[in-house]
Image (cartoon, rainbow, N blue to C red; front, side, top):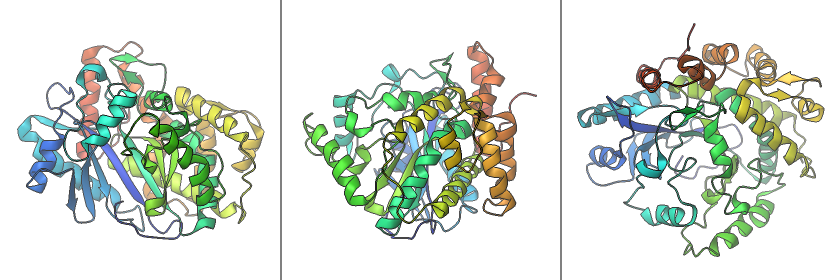
Amino acid sequence: MTDTVVLPAFAGYGLEIEYMIVDRKTLDVRPLADQVLCQAAGHPANDVERGRMGWSNELALHLLEIKNRMPDPSLDGLPHAFREEVAAIDALLEPMGARLMPGGMHPWMDPTTETRLWTHENSSIYRAYDRIFDCRRHGWGNLQSIHLNLPFGDDAEFARLHAAIRLVLPLLPALAASSPFAEGRATGFMDYRLEAYREHQNLLPSSVGECIPRPSASPAEYRAQILAPMYREIAEYGDGGVLQHEWLNVRAAIPRFERNAIEIRILDVQECPTADIAIAAAVVALVRRLYDEMPDEPDVDATNHTATLARIFRNCIRDGERAIIEDDRYLSQLGLDGGRWRADEVWTDLIDPLAATGALAATWEAPLRLILERGPLARRLAAAVGDTPDPHRLRDVYRELAQCLHDDRAFPGPG
């Protein structure tokens, strides 16, 4: 979302989806984002406006972001809108011998040698990031995510929305993990993108914390306790002020006060827009249920609970839907009985009532059912490639994944 529109909670949704540009034959990354944006705009540009939709650059030249420029009141029409933008970009890339590819990470890219940073407008931001953090690493030069923006209308809505989102964040890798490979190898993580992301900005501890955000009672409190220390800390690295913005905050969800929204940042890109937005719809429905159940003034005196949420989050990053959750307090906050649960069992017990009551539209049943029955995309990719990835097999599977994006269809995996 670009322009500031103050909406009450759940009155609109903004999605940003990042895609890799790869060679049509080899699927190696291609640093062509600036050429695509220039062709689309008719002049050098870092943003292209296409009615309700838009394209923009990211840190690396092999990435493009597609987004709805203004909040949409419903997610229902967004798969078609994103599909059309994918097709338009692919049409520009085809004469260049390139195409878009989905997924949370490129599975064999070497970020040390293949990362090319954006060198045009706003390049001072990326140079500062690179000088301080070294962006030629996983978590910087090789990651593709979905950002889901949820609005809040006032301070009270911010507190309730932030509290509800915190409870949902640990479970998201179990639903959305799509990055089991890095540099041609199985990583042992269903969501290696998030494993790298959790620590990619550790040089600036105030910007990441435990990744799961601590409770916050108001925007004023958040600015004082989170943003102000972060800005002071980055200033010590001589950033010249160019990084002292709220997007320097890399927690799993961050307030975007400039547009009165909270941005969830930890969803891996799926195989196609329908799958991406189905996951977004499930997240929205669950956050809304928890928001509605939240007291007007949520209990924010629970900072120690952040460590529990972070532990569950790490387990889901590693094991995906097979992660074990057995914290009775957390399960109770989700409305579930205590005991020992697998993450996919938790999601099933959360999603089924939402679907039955109409809080989650029937539109999303098929893509979500595939995830609940066969695992997140990472599990299906790992099953298709095997325990010891063969380079040819890995390439074939990701070629099929790129075609799934083109066709907006599911990747079911083997069997």
